[in-house]
Length: 68
Image 1 (cartoon, rainbow, N blue to C red):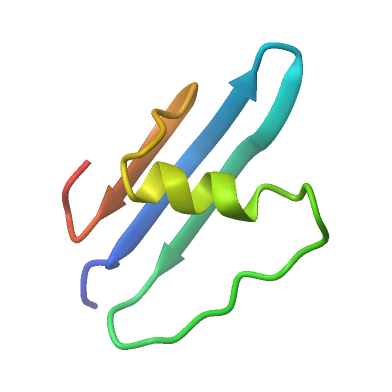
Image 2: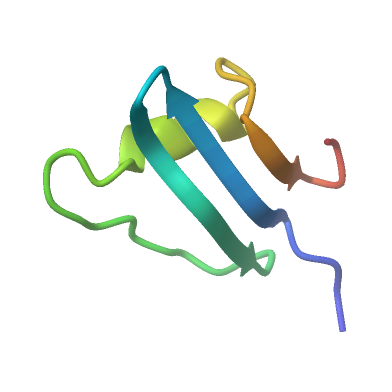
């Protein structure tokens, strides 16, 4: 089994009293195409910003290509 290209465990992001992400956990294998779907305000952009290191998660770990 190969190591996941994206590995997210228990990631949460809080903005003051607003919870944007609440303990998200997912693993995406290399070579697989996924869609990130959800209603407005579901935290899609916040998750992408955490993965792109534009935001630091309040708790949990997020690795992309093995880099935390």
